[in-house]
Amino acid sequence: MSKTITHAIRIHETGPASVMKLEQVELGEPGSGEVLLRQHAIGVNYIDVYFRSGIYKQPMPGAIGMEGAGVIEKIGPDVTHFKVGDRVAYAGGPTGSYSEARIMPAKVLVHLPEQISFEQGAAMMLQGMTVQYLIKDVYAIKKGDTVLFHAAAGGVGLIASQWIKALGGHMIGTVGTPEKAKLAQSLGCEHTILYTQEDFVARVKEITNGAGVVAAYDSVGKDTFMKSMDCLAPRGMLVTYGASSGALEPLDLSILGGKGSLRVCRPTIATYVQDRKLLEPMANDLFQMVVSGQIKLQINHKYSLKDAAQAHIDLEGRKTTGSSILLP
Image (cartoon, rainbow, N blue to C red; front, side, top):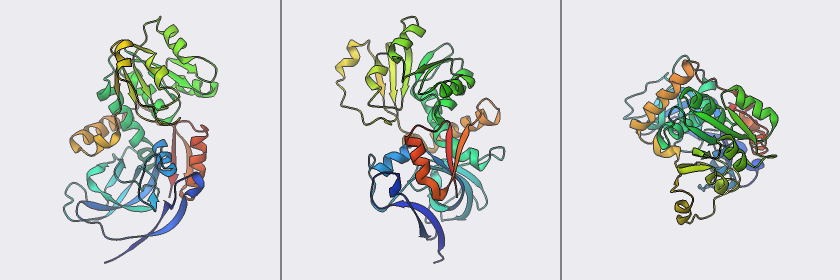
């Protein structure tokens, strides 16, 4: 059996960014339903921190990364919808995108349009498809809806700003600095709240004349969850899809009734990418928005693969805006 020698980031224990090491890895042949993918760009996302730090568990030695784009070099048995040389991108599936090449299940890959670069593909798949299911499926934003979106200057937030505006919705976004506020506003976020200086619950009530928002999208978690709930209008929905400030405490569901018959949802992209009937329309919707120019991607930070630890340090230190990528 032929072997492919590549380099990949591995961890042998969970912990700080320094546990990530660039190692030589030997890949075998792709098996049934698999392909060998040569990666041209790799996405960096906060979920990678969860795996590295041990919030999300995996066997050791562990692999890091959920997103990438590249070219198929080999195809295993029973792969029917891809061929050698196809440009593809993905988000989700097994961890391990922090690598030059990898064996991937074909079912989580999508064809990357020629109009979209590998760097764009790696920067947009997880964040862009997350926005797609958040605002078009979990709570389908309608024209005139006002919503709250935390981390408005992050990769997900900046895509959401543009997409929500295109849908005719109104976005209130929380940010940490005046510079981040300016960036979010430039891409369609109508109101920004400096959470470091302002009470975001009071500001949301002020902006909405006391009505509250129909939905709140919260990737911060522990620090904002209950306050996000207080921003909702009666029958509003709180969508929690991350926990950058820490894991949530158990929730007494009776609270939802007393606060106005509220709803809470905890979606994950894994549900969507494992079902091609959901994955393909979701990805195609995102591609159309990017190709048409309605969404302009903000790839503001690029690192070499060997510098993945620095990428995590910057991400956790809230020094980044938009998308960050690794280049193998």
